[in-house]
Image (cartoon, rainbow, N blue to C red; front, side):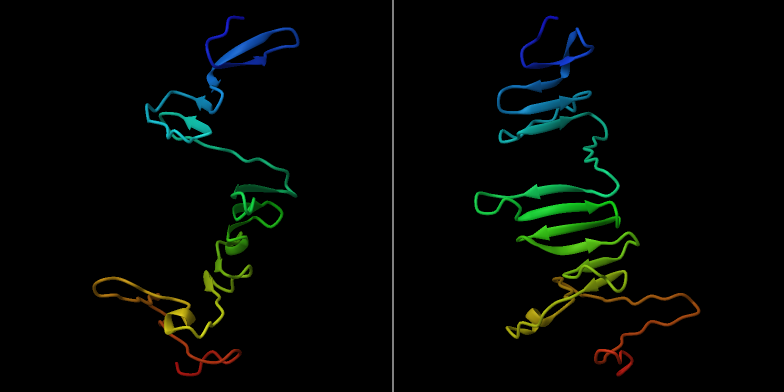
Length: 171
């Protein structure tokens, strides 16, 4: 089998080698090309998936395992991570080596909690540094800022103030 520059050879049978023009390694970068998009590649790219339509990267693992995409540096190999755990069907996001957000199989989102209690649960620890440091929700915009509480025609919108276990004080 003749080989073009940078093409990777693979075993097409027990006795035959074939070349792939869609899979290339130039010594520093692995490129997988469908029909090329024609886009420029950043010079520090190590792996390039290039296709002129939708492009998918699959991370496949067993039903009891998980898929992981890690971000690290010389100080910490896994400072950041995107995780999917198949047994519980949740996705989580790690920053600074700690889980910071989780999306459950029900679609509930927890920020700084692994067990969201509603569609969005934000958990924080009061630092006492400033009002913003104790805030669980901040709406920030350079013009009018609105918080809308919308409910169906048979219900109402509420903001409840209260202590733990007594959430209807101040309704």
